[in-house]
Amino acid sequence: MRVTIDRDECTSCAACWEEYPEIFEENEDDGMAQIVAKFRVSAAPGKGEVPDGLVETAKSAADECPAEVIHVEE
Image (cartoon, rainbow, N blue to C red; front, side):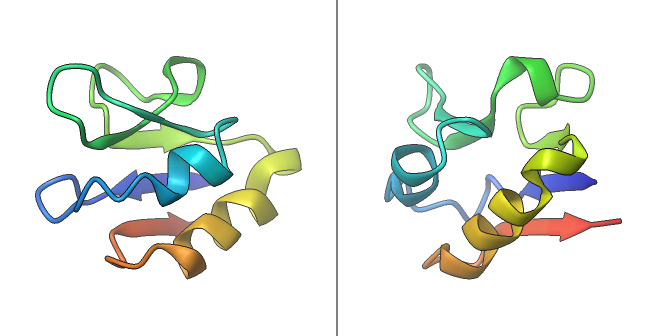
């Protein structure tokens, strides 16, 4: 399952990385959300692929993101 973060619109509220640290983390350089390295696609911090066991977690993060910048696609 593909997970993307529109990092240009991220508000750095920390909701995703505090609630779902298995998928998201704070980027040390700019303070924005990013996909953890093991699920990241290429070097793009806002693009990733999560395994089946984390699909519901990713969907919950997308639903709960106050800025609505997390997107989950099949």
